[in-house]
Every structure is written in structure tokens, then in C-alpha cells.
Image: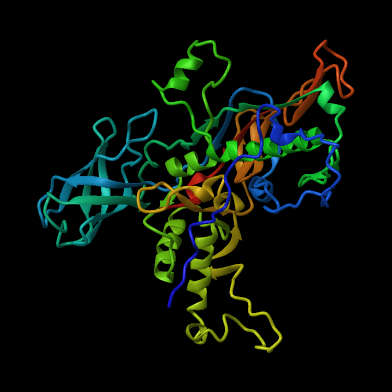
Length: 477
């Protein structure tokens, strides 16, 4: 009989942080007439373990300074020419034809990158067959070129078929002039803008003088009997997490949006123009797998087939939520002849004292795929608590190419090696905005204002650069 996890009691999502000092944060019972004292555990119990979720960008990227409000870089375009939406005016078996290209033409020129004398493959998109032909004339403005077929049988298929054309070489007669015209490299220019991220913690001077009876602790090792120490350190931990999640989730302000109106002059002090986070970029310029997790090799083969058509990066890391990780483990276990019987998932000794390893760290099929759990996708206070199901938009994983790539940095004015995923923060010789923190007030060592409190301010200005987004995969419901 199959069991299930009861819905109640459930996990708590009640925030423990408050904007004001409530009685739940401080002792209010000072009744000394009660002769009985409770036994207390002095130290807080860390019932949720490590609550921070930042680690992803530290694992796959790097941080480097930038001096501008705009970060621009150029990525290589394709080396060879191919058009996939072409029409022929020739009838079946015709010796010659004029091909009209309906694809998006070269940016800035509006012309086709085909020249007289080049040899081409012309293939019917429906699979009726293909021809080899030589280009005899080109009208770059009209986006057409004339061809003569090499085959005696002439053109394959009627003129109503949509065709794909790509160049494979050229052929000229003896004693003739060289190739007419030349081609210029066509780079893809991308940019992103940094956003300013802020946070603050404040505590009054009086509350700083109040000692507590519980020893507080945080994930970064801060301990003490003063409650404000815990709150200040947790504010710092939250800010650290937001530095990462903002780079993952950020989106640019769309034209006509409320944020765009703010940037146009509404003096609220919040919001500007947004930024292009990792999820946004991969959804728009990368690869998207939806309809459930790839759970069998045939489904992974479709992913590999797409990677073949992109940069073909040899090593990739797949950051997954718990269910996706289990799907990969089960898929790999099924490849073992003993997997179905539960005997072994790998090459184990099957010692009776051995803890059976039912998981995998990666696999190779065409490329190397390394699997890593991503806490951000599992945490119920972040993406782990979002609805599931088709159309929900839930993100189950992200495939990130490993290593670095060479790009032309338009700010530096030279080629540079950059990780596929990295953060640029604002900095100069006099101002470093990677991670700023400062104290104001007249308490806690601060003496720069008349405010009877200590305010700890946090600020960073940064943007994430997703280079070669065509090599990334995002896995959605």
C-alpha cells in the first residue's frame, strides 16, 4: 500500500524577520515573584539548517569590475551561410531557376551573402530530395539569385516547395577573374545594465544595551547574547542571497510598464530600467525544455542534438531541483541490468555493511553532464514553494556550459577571456560598489549623526553577463 506525507503539520513559511521590534523579539516578563525558574537551552536550535541559498554564481562564474552604466560585448556569428526559407520559380526537372530568399537578411545591409560562382546545396524542406547547383547571378537588393543545376534530371520537386540553401564551395573556369565581392564578419552585439541593490538594519541605542538570555547564532558564525547581533548578521545574509537571486531573476523594464514610467520621471526613488538576469536571457536567447523533466535517454538525445547545433561545449553542469535530480538518477540506474531489481546502481562491492549509493554525480553521452543540486530551486521560501504542472512556469533546472569563452569587450576595446556566466560590478579607483557597507547614527561605535540608533547600510551595483546564451538550457514545467 502506497503512503504519502501528511499535509499537516507542514513546514513553516512565517518570516522570522520583522520591520519593528515586537514583543516576540524581546523579553517582557520580568516577574520576580515567581519562585520557579525554567530550565533553558541557552543556544538557539538551528531547525532549518543552513538557510542561505547563495552559491550558484560563485560556483560557475567570476566577478570583475566595470566602469559604466552599460556593459557591451560582441559574440561571434555563424561562419557559414545557410538560408532555410527559400522558394524556386523553376518547375520540376528545370535546368535553371531563380531562388528567392525569405529569411531575415544580413543586419545593416538587407542583402544576401551569396556570390556568383559559389556552389550550393538546395534541399526540399519536406524531404523530397536535393540538388547541387552553381550561382550564375545575384540580385542582393531583391534577395534573389539564379542557379544552374549540375544534375541532368534538373530541379527536384515543383516550384511550390520551400527549400533550404547552403554554400559548400565555388567553381570557376580557367583564366577568369577572381570572386566578385567580399563578405564582412557579422558580430552579435549584446549589452546589460547594472542595478543598485540595497538593504539596511537599524537598532536603537537603548536596545543595544539590553542583554538577552538566549545565545543567538547565524550561518556565518556570529554568536552572542545580544539580539541585535543576530538581526544585523541575518540582514547581511539576506543581502548576500539577494545579490545572487537578483542576478538570476532580474528582467528589463518593458516599454509601457509601470517601472518604465518610474524611469521616465516619477520621483519615487525606487526602480529604474531593470536588468537581464540569467533566466530572462536563457528564455529569450538560449534553449528551453518544457513539458516535464527529461527522464529517459531519448529525451536527453534531443537536448544533445540541440547542443550539437549550438556551441558544442564539451562539459556542462546541470543545476537541478530535487525531483529533477531523482529523475536523472532513476534514468541512469535503469541502464544497469540489476537496476530494476534494486541490487545495484553501479559498480559496487555489495558489501553488507556498505551504504548503497542510489545517486549519480554525472554521466557522459556525447558530452559530459555533471549534476548538482541547486538549493534555490528547492527552498520553500524561494522557487521551491511555487506551483507545479504544465504552464505553471516552474523552473526545474538550468544547464550551464563549463569553462570560459573569448569575446570582444567593447568597454575594454579588446578580446578577453570570460566565464560563460559572470558578474560585473561598478568600481573605479575611488569608488568600489561591489559590496559596500557603512554605519550611521550615534550608537554602536557610530558618531556621525544625532540619531540615537545604529543603522547598518548595504549596497551593491552589479549586472550578470550571460555569454553564449545559445549554449544554455533552462528546464521548465
